[in-house]
Length: 428
Ligand SMILES: [Zn+2]
Image (cartoon, rainbow, N blue to C red; front, side, top):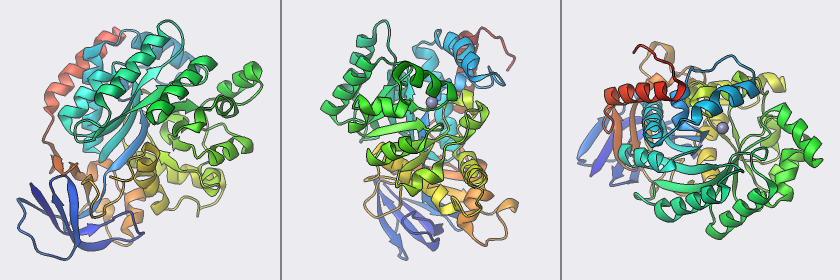
């Protein structure tokens, strides 16, 4: 199978420029970029589009789509402990499957081709990833308490069974939820298992102010200092949030090459603050971008996150030159791929890389005139401009239509599954 994207505006994310040309995809790889002729099986006229790498959502909990707009405008702790956790106690396989399908549909339609997830009933999310054709790093959420050993064993089993399966589209990481939900012993054990398998660790760190206060009271140090002392950062780590961090924390993250995921919508909505992205980047930290779960965002729209990351970091730095458009696009592509350790295969458009490609429509009122199209992607575009999405050489979405998802069934099933979790009966 070959796909030729002809006469398009190519943003490779290798260089800060857009060039006219063609891209050839053969099987699952990008095989040519430039000016050439080729009789491909499928030809896409790319003239009205920016053709760029698929977006990487580096931190989310996709099945939480079922709790979207269920518990809003509440303080963080009551939101989590009185609304989200009780509803999640009703989760089962079927609900996680349909919640995953709903978010995967949303992600594909908004240009995300790879996501990094932490949640429960991970087998069901794996099933949804396989069926839809998207790419994912998945981790089963791990918290201390009853059956913590079984949960870790389940995570190890998932790794043994599914890691690098389905043409390598599925990777299994280990996902200790946070230092405030995992005991020190448990975190050490998880770190040991990650080391044995060379998996990523995916964890929430320093999200709320309360988390910092509690850690200092309990351990005498910050969450970042604490997990570092436990050896967690001796393994590749994807650390979501890192909002409430001091200079010493930032130095540890830099020294230990921890990948930070900025989630501006979630941090703003839950009033947790602003991660000092510019300060972290100045120290050489790899900062990626994520949406967090759909109940604290309330969508999976990475164009919105790019827009917010650019604006929020300018205002907190009191500097309009901070996080220019291309840097923000890097957070959503190259840096995300690097955080997930898939940058050898995706994150840029290069010959030999896997074909995870999106086409963004620039033939819209809000995209004219065409001055600096890189700036347009961050400051003017919206996710609804995404027209075509290719993952691993397979077209999943074309002319804004799903090719691997029966979307009406997903809406119905997700609505039903949501009502079962919350007990609310809603009219469709
Ligand atoms: Zn999260």
